[in-house]
Length: 380
Image 1 (cartoon, rainbow, N blue to C red):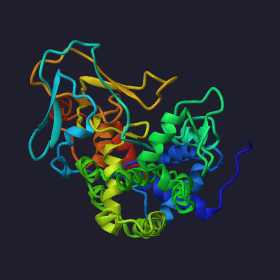
Image 2 (image 1 turned 90 degrees about the horizontal axis):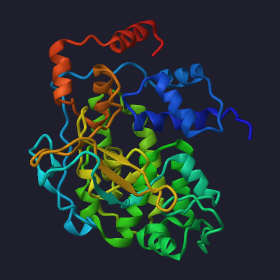
Image 3 (image 1 turned 180 degrees about the horizontal axis):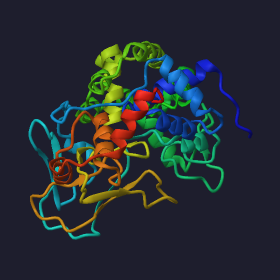
């Protein structure tokens, strides 16, 4: 199907949602994300720049070296972790680092430490679109080689009756309604993965009463994150309020507690953005992992034929007892300044050994100089 030029209102909503999701990204990267989220659209970078400038959503992000926000978090209930690997333990690592995972026994490079299925899944949009077309399981997202088991209410396809029943027990019954589908359609239209994930998480909490699990995921309010980036939340807030109305309508008549307030909604969006794995899954044990620009473990999707959403956590090097397990939240190939800006989305400045060494060396980041020049010329 040929790409089309989207209406101005649709494009504006999608760009605001992307800027909400990725406050540290500049115009070029927001434009690239837009085309990934909406491959059916043809949009020039010039048009993207104009809309972002009109909304006051341009400019570079400057984060002081000692700046930080502290997400609130708590240890996940033991009942929410299917299998606790004997080689690791869950610990509170202090007020700044929060919870984390620490090696109990020696770990060898290449060891598969654990495998985990998601608590909820809001897959990448190309996979979501495939689900809507009946080409992938609407629960686990595994591609279907033949016609699956359909949901009688909405027609979405599932691998088998087990996946269908698991989906129903985890909130599909609620999102299968007309108002639930409207909320998911809004998230898709705007390319807003956090809203999609929050819809899934809310439906699961209402279905299973796992409020303690939901609240154990680290949280940093959406508004706090954006203000940490030095951004004006005025125009964004009006879009958040409109989205909140659709969210409330999807769960009308349900007791949402704090999740049913605008503040709770914004915290929920922040909670999703903070904890989602790169491919859209929210995992209970994985959510304890902290960041390092020199990670010692990696997260991979190795079961693409039978369980696409299942992750395998693998040691990148030998790990000694007492050493914290870390992943990288950003591309480790980025320069110091690029990593620092990208990590601003999580509300902290990284103090790993690599970043401390780069800072002490006084590393000059060409990307910083380029950003300042572009901003001065009015092209950011």
